[in-house]
Image (cartoon, rainbow, N blue to C red; front, top):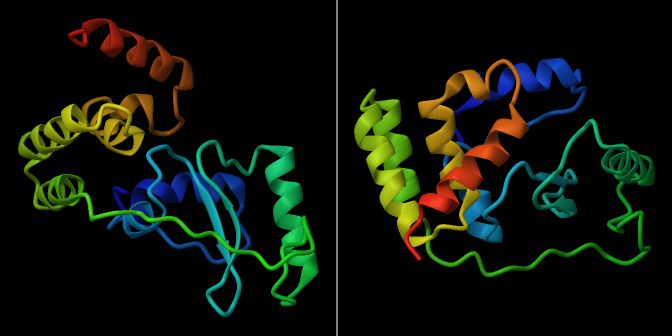
Length: 167
């Protein structure tokens, strides 16, 4: 969500040979209602969702790559290559997360501390929202995300935060 520059190293490392879009406004998060990242959502040339995996999508995961390869080899039939049925993903994403968007706008303006405070407030209201949590972590601990993501650190950090959370 922190923009194309933040995601560019992963795209370059993956040698992505297809168009990618960075959703820095969290439009897809609002639409699909996901609270966990990374996600993979692939659209055909008509804008139809052909593949969606929420949480844990990775180009390093063989099954994710195989699903995308099946999708690409299926062409534009409008069918999900895995099931032979028309693909559809319908979820009520609910209202836009204004605290998340507000924090991103503050960050873009250079007001890091107020952005993190807005995200902390949003996280207190929705403690299982990992999109918000990871924005806080990435801003406060960029060395744990750039140039590579420290997944073990994230697990440890989550455990520390859960222990500190009031019962």
